[in-house]
Structures are given as C-alpha cells and as structure tokens.
Length: 220
Image (cartoon, rainbow, N blue to C red; front, side, top):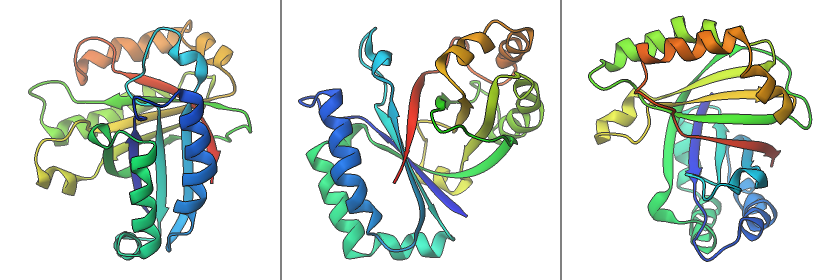
C-alpha cells in the first residue's frame, strides 16, 4: 500500500471547532470522491490540547492507495483537484506538510473505538546518517518502546527515501501510538518501560522533547 500523510494547520481566522467541523463535514466527503483511495482517516487534535496555547498542527490526514500508480491517477482526477482547491477555505497552505511514508508496525494491537492517538514528529539526531537513524529507530528503539504495556498499537511512519530527492524535509517520520484513553497515556509515562524508552532517545533523536499532538481518528 502507498500511504500519504498530510500535516494540517488551520487558517488563523478559524476557531478550532469551526475548522474541525468543516474538515470532517464538508472537506472529508469531497476528498472521499477522489478515485483510488482505499482508506481515508482524519485525526483531529483533542480540544484540551489547546489549553496551553496553539499546537504545531491541528491534525493529520492519512490516505492509502493500492500503489503509487493509483495515487498518481488520483492526483490527476477532477475530484482530487476540487478537494485541493477546497483546502484554501480552512487550511493554512503555507504550513501544510505532505509526507509519503513507509509504514512499519512495531506493535500490532487492536484500536478501541474511542482510542486516543499520539503523533510525534520525528527528526534524526544532527550528524546522524539517515540510513543509520532509520535502522536504529525501527530495530532498536521500536522494540524498547513497544514494551510499554498500555500502548494498544505502535507504528513508525518513515518518510520515503524518494522524498529527500526534493531537498531537506521538515521531518524524517512520525511515531504513532494508540491508547485506550488519555488516562492510560498518562499512566504509561509513569512506568519503568517508559523511562527506558526516554533514556534511549539521545542515541538517535535531537536533545529535548519532539513536538507532538494528541488526536482522535475520524474514519472518512
């Protein structure tokens, strides 16, 4: 499967509520009409996430296609072009980031209906070779983090290597984890396994916390 993730920030004149309503209620059905889309998920930031101010992104869109050819066919369709034009109504296009990704499932578990989803925007440690970073993240760090028991599912979305042909990219990937609730997410952060996960991060990530958003999925 060919997956495209789009990081979305709303227009500055829109409230979070109006943005989410339009994205799900109007834009979602419009995008759904485009040919070749096998699955379409919107992930909306939780309202409580804004208590401390604006978030880096207000959500992400995830589109799955059978293959890259199906994606290219979709791009050239009138339906997809209409959906792209509609973005100007509610999205700050200057802050939008499109990421073709390779998905690696680290922990394959069931996702509950009301689950929350943590999305971490990942960059490699300065000076670290891309190949070394990708191998370490998947093969060393992934198994360490997967031991946090309250994680329902854990995926790494690695930016496709072809994306780097266009030059430097904002992010090298996304770490996506699902939890039954925000309470479980907070509980996980108190565990020894979480501490081991954090202790390993300096081996391949920049110093400090990577930016995150906490969301709920809406299957379109």
